[in-house]
Image (cartoon, rainbow, N blue to C red):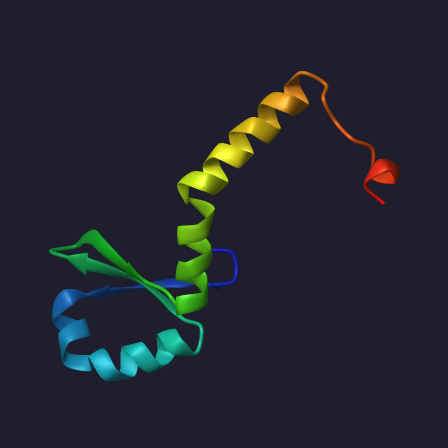
Length: 84
């Protein structure tokens, strides 16, 4: 959650009672861990942060990252000069 500051906790009961206000705060950049009986159950994130999280764990991205790390370990790198 790179762009999100401090993450607050909110219980399910409180969330149900204040959902509209909580969603407005999330839209403004806040993040919450939703707890159920005191245990973490879910996370509320601004949509931009959620998109980043999903993309960072997408199969294609994970495959590309593994391949790049393997190439790096084998010394198959390209200098910055060569990229330009």
